Amino acid sequence: MQRIAAKSPQAERAYALVVSLQQQFVECMQGVSRSAGSGREFEPAEWFRAEGKYGGGTRYVANDSDFFNQASVNVSQVQYDADESKALASATALSSIIHPHNPSAPSVHLHVSWTEMKTGRGYWRVMADLNPAIENPQHTARFKAALETASHDMGVTVSLETAFAQGDRYFYIPTLERHRGACHFYLENYYTDNAEADLAVAERIISGVIDSYASLLSEVASNKALLSAEDFRRQLDYHSLYFFQVLTLDRGTTSGLLVHDQNDVGILGSLPLHVDKALIRSWLPKMPTPQEKLLQSLLDCLPAPEPSSDSKSLIDESAKRALATAVRSHYKQYPEALALQASGEIIPPTVANHQ
Image 1 (cartoon, one colour):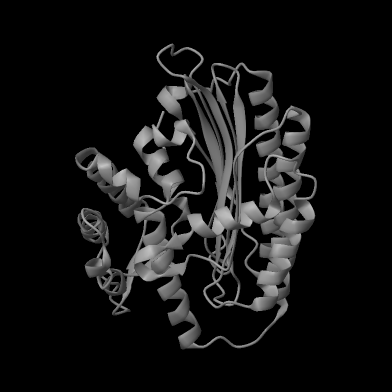
Image 2: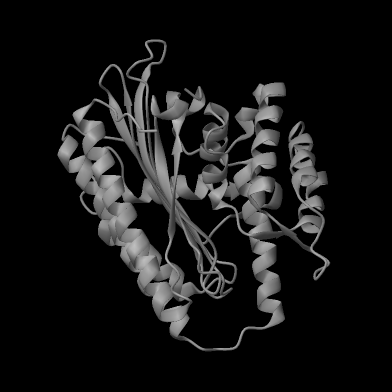
């Protein structure tokens, strides 16, 4: 099979950018793995939208279980040049989540995408958030400083303060009255009159964050402080919260799952390897109607705790496929529940309508 690329020159430039950023991130993570883990290479996996007719993507998945809990760096381009019924021309994206094995090392989520309509109008989405199981204020300050440095001269359409505020709003979990992470940055519907400058802003932000995060991980890896059972317990609790936010609130994840079922494992590559099923079940009474039904369906997809543990449920590929099906089934039955998903100040029509 072969992926058919989008025809638009701007989509072509966006694809070249996300592939370059993917390579940068994989090389950085591979370097940390070689110095602090087993050094096993990231493994590429392809997926195709309608057997490549409408594009597809490649994700790189970590094989170094000594250093990574889960790690996935995904690039995709979906295009509808041959489908006149679609208003969306193409969507080109890099999306990545890194969950280190060390509880002292924070997880990170990065996303950059170019969405283009057939009218010719397009916009960027840029997200970066630091997600520690055990927060280190110095890590948070460094991550925020990297974003501030990389985000200079964004133009007049949005301020740096707005990007941080939108991130805090998007990653807030109302039922648990807390945020998912420690630092959240979110540019939505970003564009100016200078397309080349906009692309440069997107590149500078994500590239800067990649370098900053790799440096942070290397420093944590070089610290040989002993980790306790309590440290790993806190990490499991946090990974359970991460699972909860992604599958009950994250609008981007839900949209991706509702569009098609040809990349379920890739889309849910953001999930950690284990969660505490009992802890997640304890949040059921906090859920608004009908989201308690969604959470119960997700719990039904999780296997029983592993024999060696009274709390850890494994999220393997089979579980990811079941979880994706549960999300689709829920919103097909309760489409009005999409209004309960997380959002920044702006929800683009392409996301709101799941084109």
